[in-house]
Image 1: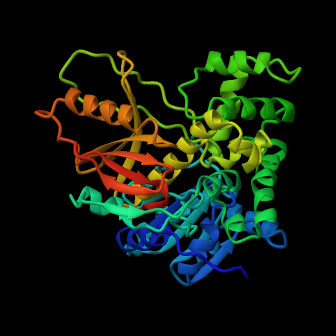
Image 2: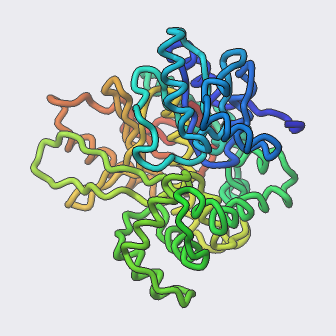
Amino acid sequence: MGKKYLNRIADKILSDRLTSSGAVLMEGPKWCGKTWTAARISKSQLYMQDPDRTKSYLKAADTKPSLLLKGETPRLLDEWQAAPVLWDAVRFMVDQRGEAGQFILTGSAVPQDNIVQHTGTGRISRMMMRPMSLYESLESNGTISLTELFDGNTDIGAFSELTIEQTAFAIVRGGWPASVVDTPKSALRHAVDYVEAVINEDVSRVDGVEKNPARVRALLRSLARNISTMATMKTIHDDIAMGDTDESISEKTISQYLNALNRIFVTENLPAWNPVLRSKTAIRTSPKRQFVDPSIATAVMRLTPERLLDDFNYFGFLFESLCIRDLRIYAEAIDGSVFHYRDSSGLEADAVIALNDGRWAAVEIKLGSKEIEEAAKHLMELKNKVNTEKMQEPVFLMILTGTEVAYRREDGVLIVPIGCLKD
């Protein structure tokens, strides 16, 4: 913890949740900063993975779990899933005390189904923490706020200082806190180390089922090649079969491996949005393939920022992944979720931000300025397709770009560089 702490959007979300819930569960991938963020706000801590104490903690959890809950509140229970009985113990203690802000649980893996007796609904609030957004890593200047756009302040004008070269570097480095504060050369190593740990340890440890590292690597490479697409299980299976590995892998095994990757928050697919349309157009329901951070794709493909700049087509898919990560982080802060839209006519929107109060906005993501005209046309088409008698009109339509200038077009569509956006 010697390195400088950069403020996180999750700081405020966690504080707010602790005032309204007895306990907060912070979930997310390893190395994304959950422990650091939670430790700063907690008054006492229990680190389940402290090698000197793990055995005695597990013994206490088996005999009298309430012993592990003793301490000043909020009490941090880090990597609680190592002793899943803690979930029910926390739930019971929250009921007993009847006060908010008692516990923070952090977890980088979802325990197996049915391992906890109760869901914790009403007592334990869940929040997802991801690697850092460009605003948190101080690479976006934050001159345009998603909150303000949703409040109707869409008369925008700003400049992004983020160059295409810096964007490529940010994708390959990722939003891992240790990378963000490291020297450029060392920063690119963290994502590779993360991926190697996933392949060789984490993906097997999550459910205790040994997985073939060569197959896990082949699957991750296929997911990387198909990032920001709606690739089916069959597409992934065929892609692995044609790939650079001798490993044959069945669709059933792929499904099991994907489940394990989901449970350790390596993958975070983008679900489809299902609005009420004026016409009878069928909406595609397949999710889009995404990692929780685009650097996972570049690490498993061993891509450098320079190589990314040589392949602008693939750069575009990874840029979309970067933008989706940031939009998810910003949307979480305003009680919203991010989806994608595609219908049978081929009309699509890369992102739809839907807030829980019914407000929504459609977003197209374009690395350069060439495709802006077409993207604006697509957004207008989607706006006209949605049945506004049964749903609200979009608050705004936005094209999120890798360009420099933020402005509002004559048709009302907002052009926003990712280097200007914040929550």
